[in-house]
Length: 94
Image 1 (cartoon, rainbow, N blue to C red):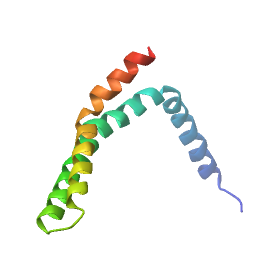
Image 2: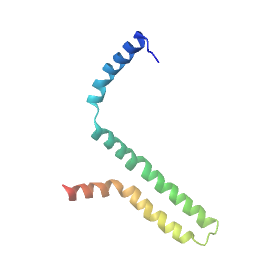
Image 3: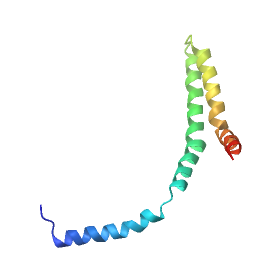
Image 4: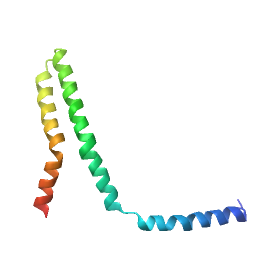
């Protein structure tokens, strides 16, 4: 398979333009943004959904509803307390 000259030139030009972008990327800031989204958005949302599911289990008369409720409360404490827990662990490490 033979590539045309214009395709080779376009491929080289594209790679030259993309190389500086790779050099300027920051893995630490990207991981920090992912951690921030996880802690501030996803964990509280999961905690609230767990509480809703356990309340639904309780209202439908499930025999394991009490354990579901306790597990949801523990999950909510972990979910809403995650920023404090992480800052505590960071303080211990530093």
